[in-house]
Amino acid sequence: MGEWSNFFIGTAGAAATLTGLIFVGVSINLAKILSIPKLPDRALISLILLLQILILSLLFLVPGQSLTILGIEVLCLGVIVYATIFKIDISVFLKTEKKFRPHYSFNMLLSQIALLPYLIAGFEILLQGENGFYWLIPAILFSFLKAVLDAWVLLVEINR
Image 1 (cartoon, one colour):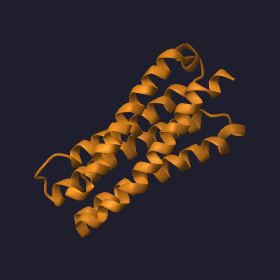
Image 2: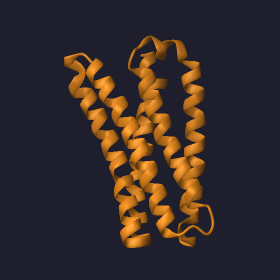
Image 3: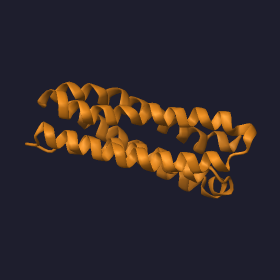
Image 4: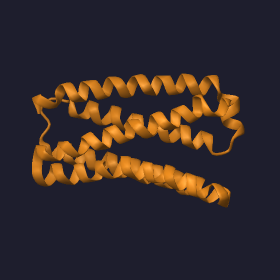
């Protein structure tokens, strides 16, 4: 586990920083974001993804936890976040005009690509031990990617 400490310290710091930047960006563009029905949900999704990275990284930095406890934590956090974001995505999709649904479907696919590796990681940690940690790499990278893409829309694209 000691070999992974720097990774989780780095991801915790990056997630905390990006979460703060999104809060600032949303507060700057709040009126515009609230005027477009789907954007508050998109902002919430990006914040949830970053908070998931932050919480997960902090849990991995707690000393003395067994791999079983870590696996359970990863799996529980993954299920909660997956269910929450899936519910938000479905709600937004159903409210989206039919001509824009293919675009939002791609956005939903990116959420799935970011979230499914967390679930796999939780199971793998429980079954295989530390080898399951490697599933957290794509989970965290795709979560960062999805959150940054959403942040770009919230901060730049809405002002075009």
